[in-house]
Length: 121
Image (cartoon, rainbow, N blue to C red; front, side, top):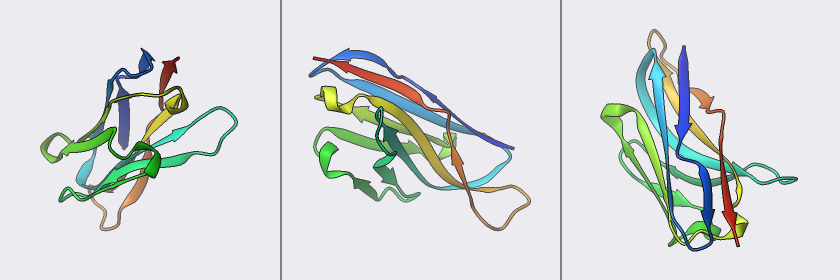
């Protein structure tokens, strides 16, 4: 069984910073792509950023230059550094990962339970 556990959400003022972490644990052979999605109230879940195992990154236009994704392959952990936060960044942030479990040859898609980020104006 594979689990993703997020941490680091909370309340911050506009212009502030937060760092989210997501650790994958369980019966893992290899973690491939990892990323962060977010869902604001009444909105669809959207991709914020993703990172491949070799470190290639992709960002939504709305967060380019403000957010940075990184990962530690040895720890099966992905991070999201969020700077210059805006009220529009308020959402539940979900960790996502494509992971090959042990005793498997194909990757499966996993989600964390989400962590709330609230940015006050």
